Length: 207
Image (cartoon, rainbow, N blue to C red; front, side, top):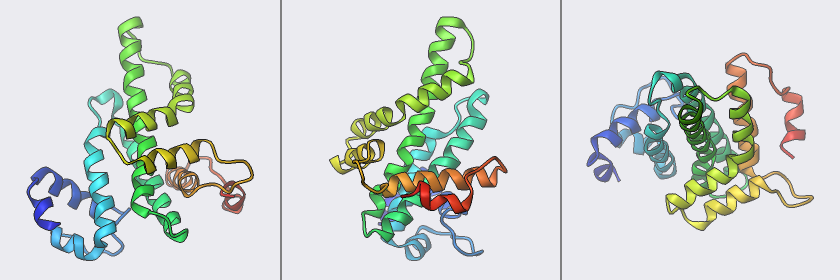
């Protein structure tokens, strides 16, 4: 696995950056090599870091107009992915699939944001209003996530995870992906000192 990763210098650089982020590194000691990352994170951990490293450039800001939005979406996405992964682990579910599925809504957000920017500039020569951005993301988040999974030729289980999160069966508990998004969102708001869901209310939202 190390040899394969090292064949791509850009992937190697991204992997070490992400492996050393607070989302993955558990101690104060920096991870300095791919070998060390594989040893410390394990196969599943490296698989998730590689997934994040591959997706990171797609969510990087393309211009100053989307810099802050892209930064916030990336932090939200990686938080939701890690939370989904940990909850899936408690349920003995596929942790890597839940991690990747947890990243897709964030990629859907940045995709929708860029498309709205393109349309509004072409038709009105202005940026889309925040209310329109919010409405589009609320309405098309899961549909766009499904389209991205299909465009990437991801296995059918990813579509199933996304569909179960979008349309939970009646009288069924929330899925690990739903719970991961709730907890990831709460953590991002907490660190941004924004109005947030009380910790005592989490069990209600996650059941």
